[in-house]
Length: 283
Image 1 (cartoon, one colour):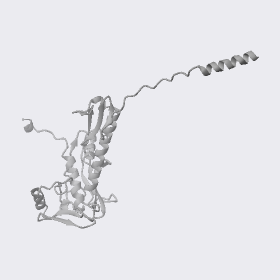
Image 2 (tube, one colour):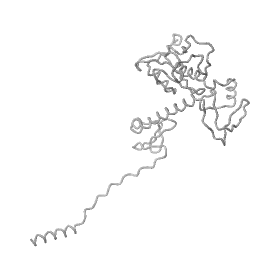
Image 3 (cartoon, rainbow, N blue to C red):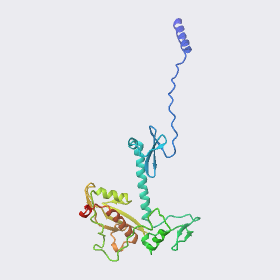
Image 4 (cartoon, helix red, strand yellow):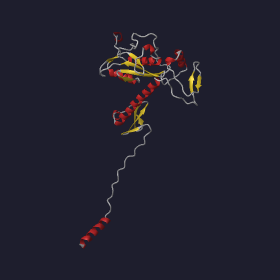
């Protein structure tokens, strides 16, 4: 028994004297290059970014003329493409919101706002709010446009030079609708729907919709695009207007801005219809 205990003690001492196994050092990883703000590492020396609403790429710090397909179709490229689509849709939504509302936001009271009067002189307004009138509401609009051209006015939104339509004084053949833009043929209903959306309009119930807040009330213009299978051809129908309770409004009673914007919407879509080439065009 004593010998067994002695052997155990000897084994423990030998184990204590045995040097600890040398731990393996983890391999050194390559130091990641610091990226320039606005660029995201896409691997293999490529970086992706968004410039002027488009996906761009560079490799080893040098910007490329185009984005290589493997990088473009990769997970990062697809995420950035989705971000671009979101930003474009957001921009269209913001533009439509501004264009269809005639109430402007508050301004800095200390700076005021600079406007050009009919004499071409700059006048500063010290006010908390300002209303931007739709061009259909301006008198002598042609003179104002001529002056704007003369002084080289530039607008982010087509306000002064926006296409306008005047409410007719006499009722059309159908008192509740305009037939001017009916009969427009599209190879697929989906083509007309996507076109309306790209122009910034909402599509619901087979119609392109333009909502306008005017005189404190909401008026909705509805341009019939057709219904059925989106992959089948379609023919556009009438343009009509409804109030905030979805009750149809007689054409001659439609408020001026809502009428003008509804006609503008329908004319833009109708202009992209399928047009058959005549024999004279082929000659």
